[in-house]
Structure formats: C-alpha cells, structure tokens
Image (cartoon, rainbow, N blue to C red; front, side, top):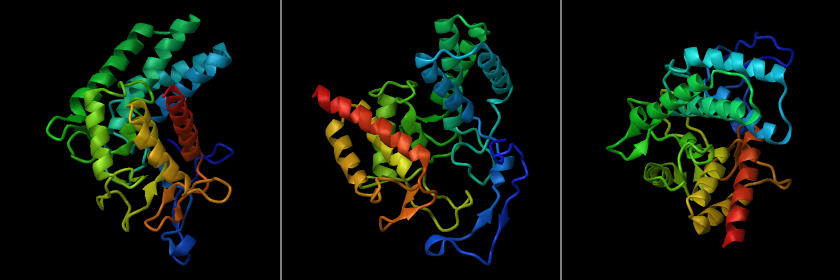
Length: 287
C-alpha cells in the first residue's frame, strides 16, 4: 500500500474520464490512483535514510524508533517479493533493482542509527539483511555481458534510478561497475541533458511514450559530479536550468520540444536539483 487520501482512507479506486483531456490534449484523464493496490518496497529505504539524516540534527524519539523497528520487521519478511517499484509500472510485478538497493539503505541506516544512538534493536540481523540485499543487487542485477545494472533480473533494460547508488553510498562514485552503468545511461537514456527513466517497452501502461524525467537528469548531474566529471556535470546542469519556468520551477517531465509535462511542480525533482547544485558547487570550489 502506497497511496492514501489526506484523511488516511484507502478508497482511491482509479476511474478514467474518457470525455475529458488534460494539458495539450493529454489522455487518459484519471481520478483516484491505482497505486492504492501497489507495493513499493523502496519507500522503506527512503524513509530510513530521511530519519538517519534528520537524526544528525535532532535526535529522534524512542517512540519513533519503536515504530520504525516494526516497519523494518515487516520489510524483513517481504523485501524478496516482487513489487511495482519506484516508477509504479503497470505491469507484472518484478523484483526491481532499485527496491533491493533501497532495502540495503533501510537496514544500513537502521544499524547506523542503533550504533550511533545506542538504540535497542537486532543490529546483527539488520546487518545480515543489508548484506543479503547488497549481494542480490551485485549478483542478480548486474549483467556482465552488458556491463551494467539492469532494471530487474531477467531483462536487459537500463533504469536511471540506479544513478542514486553513489548518492546513498551503496557504491563508490568511481566503482568500475557504476561507471560502466553511468556511461550506458549517458549513451542510451540521455538526449543532450535530458534523461529518460527507462526505455518504454509498451508493457508498462504507457501507450504513447512519455517525456524525459527531470528528476533523473539531476540525478545524472550529481552522479557525474561525484565521479569527478565536473565539467560535463556543469554543462548538463546549466542546460537543465533553461527548462525551468519563470519562477525557477520544474515539472515532472520535459517533452520532446522542451515543454513541461506531468506533475507540476514536483517536489522530488526539486530535491534532486538542490542536491545536485550543492554537490556540484562544492566540487567546483575544490577545483
């Protein structure tokens, strides 16, 4: 379960309004959200990473820790199950690489929090779960022939979500496997500065294609920065600045003609923008 109403209800059944069209004729127009029936394993890693960063400034409460520990118990029983992944793909559930990567983040951050604060918890078990998730990504989600991490085991698709590997400290920014994946994403998912989240296959609920994902473009900038390719990162970042509107805001997607598409403004995109800008600025200062 990933979607709720603002008052906590789950009655978000999706309905298509075939008599309406959206911005510039976009179809279909939906109300509700079918994601109410989806599973996204990755959210637990994102939650634990956020708590870990927050705890650096404001120590978390014991009650919050107890609640988080219960979520981690649930994850330990379900992380090996397929889900819809970060992109909410409307197709058969898969064991997405990104979901396993975020499982590693969840247990890595939990173990670090327990160690740093002396909080109670099955730390050794969490470390073993983190190690299992790490091995799964490295052994099942790496394609030695393509020399890249794939969207999920059993396919050959690239997925821009793996750009976060050095951002969450899963892989070093100059790790040969990550650099090879970075190059493939640059060659196959990137057009100028614009990065697609993955290659559209026709089996993911997107009949007419989609725009490039602004979030992924800023992830790409930060990955390049951390890999030491600062000049390239700066060029792409400055190109991306030209796609903002007059208030400096971005939509979820950028179309083939540079038009804003999808959710607007999208918070996750702007968080990636800030992170990319901060890290690029630091790298330029060091130079």
